[in-house]
Image (cartoon, rainbow, N blue to C red; front, side, top):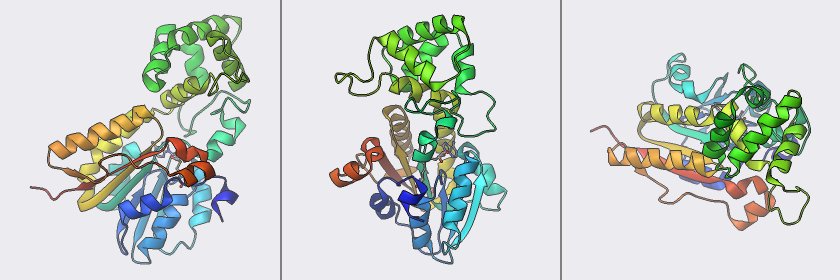
Length: 304
Ligand SMILES: C[S@@+](CC[C@H](N)C(=O)[O-])C[C@H]1O[C@@H](n2cnc3c(N)ncnc32)[C@H](O)[C@@H]1O
C-alpha cells in the first residue's frame, strides 16, 4: 500500500534513514508507528535478522500499520501502548537495550482528517481529540470543566496563544448557554473572541489553530509523555545507539533540544544534528505537513 493509499506521507524519509543509519539485524523501536510509513523504510534496512517494535496509542492506526507491514521482511511486534511506558513494554518482551529509537510526534494526517475524531476545526464533529480511546477526558470535558485561568494557561503554555486569556473568557461565557460539544462551535467561539474571520485574506492561518493544538496537547498529555520517553531513552539505548525525534512545533522541539543538550553535558549523548533537520523545498511542496517538522538525532555514548 502506498503512502497516498493510506492517507499519510512520512516526513523527512531520506533524512530519517540516513541519520538513524539502521543496519541489518538491529533492534529498532518506532515509538509512534502511525500508518507505518517510516517503519516500512526501517524494516527494509533491518532485514530478516532485525526486529522492529512499533508502538501507538491509536488502535485504528496500529491496525493499518499491521496490514501495511505484514511481510515487511523483519521480525515485527506492534503494541497498543504509550511511549511513556516504553521501558515496561520492552521489559515485558525481554528486551533491555535497543539500537535505534524513533519518535515522529503529534497526529497523523488520517487522525486530523477524520471529523469524528474531533482534532480539526476544518471538519465539524464531536470535540474529542483523544488519540487513545482509553483516555477518560476528551477536549469537550476540558473545555466545559476547566476554570478560565486553567484554560488560558493551557492555550498560552502549550501553543503560545497570546490571546489565550481572551479566548478562555469567551469559552467560559459561551458555556453558560450550554455545553460546548463540537469542533465547529469551539472554532466559532474562538473566531468571535479574537475578532477574526477565518475566510479573511488577512488571517494567515485559521484563528483557532493554536487553540486546537493546545487542547490536543492537553488531552493527550503530549509534553509529559515526551519528557517521560526522553527520560527513559539513555537506559534503553545500547552504546552507539541512536535516538531521533521529529517535532512539529516549538514547544516540543525545545523539550527535545534541551534534553539532548543536557545529556551531552553529562557525557551521555553525542549530538548528531547540531541544528534541527528540516524539509527541503520539494518535500514542503509535496507534503505540507513537513513544513513545520524538525528532526533531531543524538547518539548514545558508551558508559564511562
Ligand atoms: C505523526 S504520526 C506517525 C506517523 C508514522 N511515522 C508514519 O510514517 O506513518 C504520530 C503517531 O503517534 C501516535 N502517538 C502520539 N503520541 C503517542 C504516544 N505518547 N505513544 C504512542 N503513540 C503516540 C499517534 O497516534 C500517531 O499515530
